Amino acid sequence: MTPEEAAAVRDRVLNVIGHELRTPMTTLRGLAEALADAELDEIRAEIGPAIVRSARRLERLLDDLLVAADVTSTLPVGDPRPLRVDDALRAAWQRTGATDELDIRAQGEPWALAQPEALDRVLDNVLDNAVKYGREQPTVEIRSDGRQVEIDVHSPSDLVHPDEVSLVTEPFFRGYHAVTVAPGLGLGLTVARELTRLAGGRLEFAGQPGPEALTRIMLPCPPDPA
Amino acid sequence: MSVPLRILVADDEPDVRLLLRLQLDSRSDVEVVGEAGDGAEALTQARALQPDAVIVDLLMPKVNGFELIAALQEEQPAVGLVAYSAVAGDFVREEMRRLDVELVLKSGDITQLVEALHRSHNTGKTSK
Image (cartoon, rainbow over all chains, first blue to last red; front, side, top):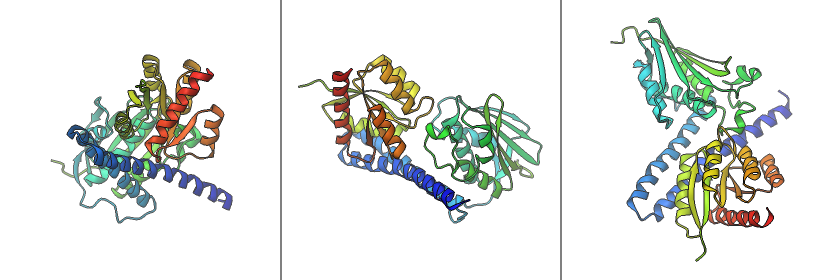
């Protein structure tokens, strides 16, 4: 990379970080000010959870930046354990704020051996992408042979150019069309890929005819989930 | 007492919409008549509600803010438009100048946004 290219990447990253930090910080400040002024209990009841959401968004942003920089001090702690992937997907889908049920089709027992918080972050990041950039609700297929579970998240989307597919999981990459649709650091799939790798699995991204974006998460199965 | 300005809020962040609603509802010169979480919904709402002015977030799914501005300038030339963004690089500032749409940053005081809404509405009434 030439110095000019490096400077361009740095400027782009700083601009995106600026936007991603500014939005929740500004919202947080505004909500706190509104809380101080609010007289009605029902307004205060709305503001409290909104403040928490903005604060959590900032925490997640900082954690993603650290993971992308190979800083491991904020990685989830705790041992991996048998987890039902379909249940984890439904919970992650609910966290996106979606009201419709997620379409999940499973073949075999949908168990994975993973640290719960890490699996949640992987699924949160993948489903957040589907919500932000998908034309319609994603659908999920789960396949397991008892040794490895594969989770395919199909998201109808024409925002990823074929030339960009190999770059989608790279840090700070954002597609040419994606940048006009939603803000983002370009770290979601990078962090999901890294957390999946640390769990002994793999995450792959592919553009498919349709067009659609396919994110495949592969994780080890527990030896005896029962 | 003058009639409050009727405002449509278009922003894909629910908490931004909540904050704007709280801040604007506390004032007597503006009234939030609708909210939209994406540009397509904003167009539908604008056609149904015929607001006096629209707060337009620029990055939104389905139809983004730039596309929404172009559509509203075509369909409802008298509606006031204010672009509302967390940050604004050179491209955004120049594009808003080209489109003759006032730009307000989200970090500013709510008074700045309200004054811009009134200006945009008055401009819409006199020039279109």
